[in-house]
Amino acid sequence: MKLIYSNASPYARTARIAIRELALLAQIEEINQHPFDNPAQLISFNPLCKVPCLIDSNGQGLFDSQVICEYLDALVDNKLFADINNDWQLKTLYSLTRGILDSSVAWQQDKVRGEEGCSEFWQKRFISSIDRGLNYLQKRIDQLPEKFNAIDINLITTLDYLAFRHPDYDWQQMHPKLASWYQTKNNRSSLTETMPQE
Ligand SMILES: N[C@@H](CCC(=O)N[C@@H](CS)C(=O)NCC(=O)O)C(=O)O
Image (cartoon, rainbow, N blue to C red; front, side, top):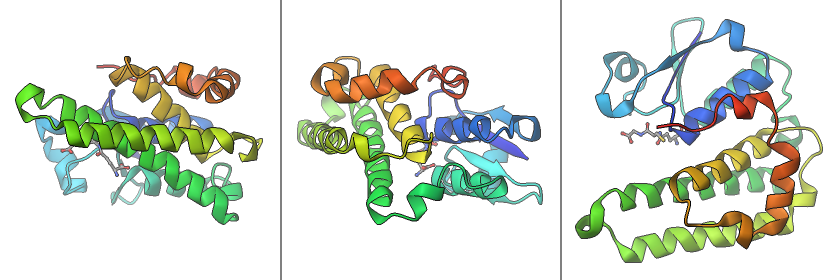
């Protein structure tokens, strides 16, 4: 199998963390391609030209990051999604982590439009949804399963992405309970090997 990813993409990072947590690295070649270069290989497997994209052992494309993570998890022994998929509240928290990540990425996309193209209205909305989302999660952090899981992957990826792209947004100071939770989780090799980079 092959995984097309880019170093700065938080969505691709969730797939790369799952690969490591599921001990699948020996079976998957990771190919670094930037979607803005419109690589022919990426487009041929994902018409959206977005990363991550997995090419499975039958030579078929799989996307997006959630589908890839669930697929890889099912290949092994449902380590990452088993607790979540049996509990609607945990599924909702999983969706919330995806939503906070979407707002964080949309905020970055708006910022790079520059002073003339960016929108104060939208940036405020993105920041409010991140604030409220992290608060909501912080209040429920003790409800997360003990075992490392797909919510942990998304949440850590989102927090690291905020520090990477929005260093002025001091999430650790604003959400101290999340910061303590993060300290107990962030030393796994799946995380340190996949930190976001330009
Ligand atoms: N919902 C998708 C989002 C993927 C996505 O937006 N990836 C970005 C990189 S962070 C991308 O490839 N963007 C290229 C583009 O929008 O043209 C997922 O979860 O995989």
